[in-house]
Length: 192
Ligand SMILES: [Zn+2]
Image 1: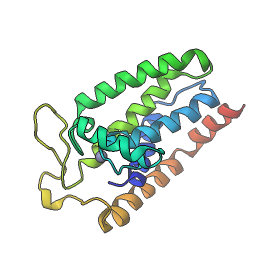
Image 2: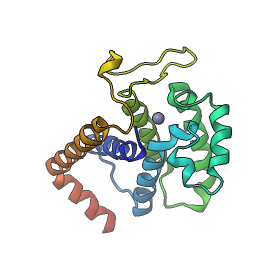
Image 3: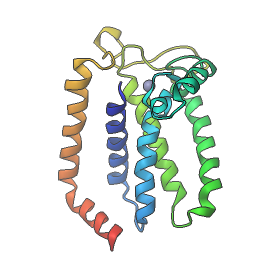
Image 4: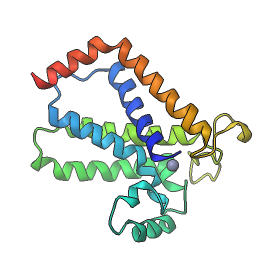
């Protein structure tokens, strides 16, 4: 899937988790960082793709993208598995713990969870792709949904752009509409 779809999926997943278990007493800086971390997590597994938006946004991205591509075993490999997610999650937590002293008002647990929810949403959404996802590496089997490959979606095709993306948008609209009181209450608490 393309980055736009992954970012929307990440925000959708974060919204579902948030509405199922709303957090109380969260600071504005935590909320902003959590959303940034979530969007970033949504595209992080594609660091194994030299042409990924993740790299395109960096000045020397093309060069680093190639190195990472080889190190991580090519596209949809280590970073698209539970093992890879655990490693990235561990490194992300180390980084956040390191940065915490300079951002006291930020709840790093919430930021970390938002990042992880973004990453997991990436793997789930990529499972609808024709190629599938090697969830259980080092077991080299790629899983996809539906199990029949022909019924799955190819990246950046009409099915993604006119079915998956708008589908997620409609889902979010319904979700926010149904929970608007809770969301309003949360936003009010943020700026109060
Ligand atoms: Zn991917």
